[in-house]
Image 1 (cartoon, rainbow, N blue to C red):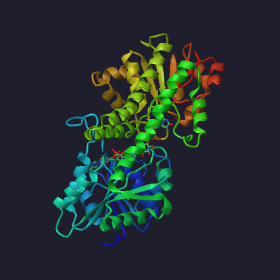
Image 2: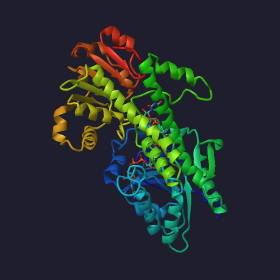
Image 3: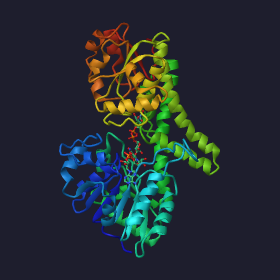
Image 4: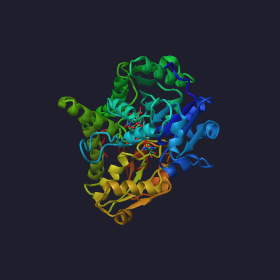
Length: 471
Ligand code: NAD
Ligand code: UGA
């Protein structure tokens, strides 16, 4: 079959990836009709809301949706219709870590991918290009092809592509408009290569040709896991060094600056922190660990597992620093946690280090006040309930307050903990914060955000991750 001129796209999954990715395709390709579908009615209603209260917060997203929605961008729960009409289908459903059964705690749960694939096979009347957008273990495309071929109607054929997404939350629109690269994996057969060209032609509407990389299917699938593993490994490496800095009096910011000047290392992704969060780094590394073990490569599995273990260590090390510094007990003390999202510019809290910190503080019987500019209150209660499964929500609510501003959160506290690097926390009026806090007033900066010397001049006792000064 020659390359298909794609004119109708369906995206299954209207989440953090499917929504922004396909909204940008619609924005950049007015000649292509894009329908994003999901089983979650509330999510679709939010995408369609007249006041553009979209289900995810992402800078620039509203403008893209305003531009294209109703023109060539549609959101719907009618999955079957969108599948039937499309010539290219993105599968962009969630692939969380399995909670039970074989591989529990490590392997990716491919149930949603399989259900979406079976739906395509069940309802498609014509041939389709099916694109794996979700992050999946190596060779998942083969399982999808087997399911599609075994269930397809006569005359329908399916070409499978892998097109993993590399956007980061908070900068998703920038990343999609000017990606470092777009990766497309296909079978190296004439049909596979033609399907690859069809998708490459969609991206060619705004992505320079040299940035569209085409490779084999399995390399594409593995490259996605590899990219996340190597990014997370960099953070665990710098965080491991931050512990050495704290013990020796070195400054992790200066160390990162010095090593980042080596053009082979580069300056990006070397910010020490309270630990990485987000829905993917941990999940994808655990997936790689599982894959390595399945392939009888225990040393490789142990190597990658250490990246996650170092992250757990960093989170608990930070909690311990808070307890140790507050005279070895925080029982009955009041702590403000600024930031609950896993990074700035998103309302997403999946695997946020703030959740672990608050859980640790609650288990020490401290009182915690949380403020985040984007995270909904209901999400915070849900996350804390999941993090403390043995504690009833009513009990949690007696220990936790949610504030509506950073200044309110810090009133009458003994300590302020910065867990997310929101820009507004850089601009806090620390003089007012100090006046309203119990003394001695402590600031624990898990994001290297504050001017520690300026805060000390006000009177604060300050601990910054990766700095060895004594308070
Ligand atoms: P998400 O949970 O935000 O969204 C997935 C959506 O798929 C949900 O709304 C869910 O209701 C829907 N869904 C599940 N099964 C369905 C079905 N059978 N039919 C229709 N809808 C269905 O997940 P996400 O963050 O968008 O991630 C999706 C995939 O992309 C994952 O594999 C993830 O690893 C990968 N990824 C995520 C990011 C990120 O920044 N979040 C970045 C790159 C890659
Ligand atoms: C990450 C990758 O950057 C994306 O390329 C990938 O597509 C995505 O995962 C995915 O597959 O889901 P994301 O998790 O959205 O994107 O955000 P990042 O900017 O990578 O940050 C992840 C975590 O690492 C955050 O908690 C962040 O605060 C932390 N981080 C990041 C650091 O602690 N230090 C740094 O130098 C950089």
